[in-house]
Image (tube, rainbow, N blue to C red):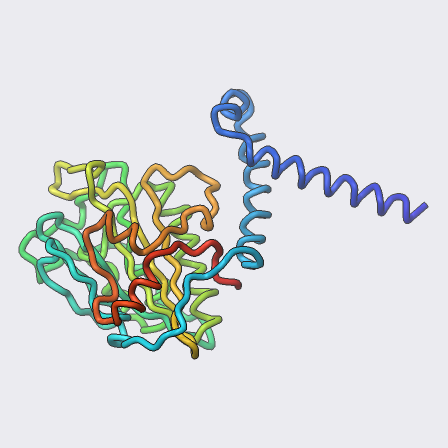
Length: 305
């Protein structure tokens, strides 16, 4: 009798998981009518399926890395392969834990680079309540540049990742407007935040060190605000891991209109695609062949956790 109940329980669990995964796969245009009537039903099953897919993707059992069995110049402690290059970069701003390629034309960072090392424990200070104006640049943004606009002030060098590796003073330096781009709340507080947490809590902990380059994508979809701030149409993040036999890279691109419950794996792109969209040249100090191998293809899996 007990075995029968166990089989029934397993059958119901499998049925529940299959229904959730099937519902997740249904296009929005078909789910929307039900969402309008019973939004909680949509949120519940989308959330359940998303949790299953997130767990599966984090295992990294299927797909391939973008890697190269080659020895290249690391660059320095912050910028792997050298500082990214681009015509619209006005100046490079150096902070304790990260570096910024700033553009006066966009009043924005175009790239932000930092390195995260493995730590024994996560220790960080209280999040500051305000942001500072960047005094080292000519075209400055007020700390209130995005207030009332519908956009969050999105960190490029992350508060948590920097604070847990470099301490309180370095954490406070992430709350300066040269480290900020406008992000829709569902991007900044959703998938972007999940990626930042994964990078800091998982990827950096599994490797000795990882390098990260991140920033906005300005294009035809960029939006000017009355404050003088420009809002990008998307944001990118490139993670680089140095291994004994070479290098590994994983790059992401996320648009401002990214839907909720989007899998990180579905936003993997090639570095070449990010270069085409941003006009930047990443890894300029690497040998040409290594740079080509690392930039031409998109990874088809997340790094296993």
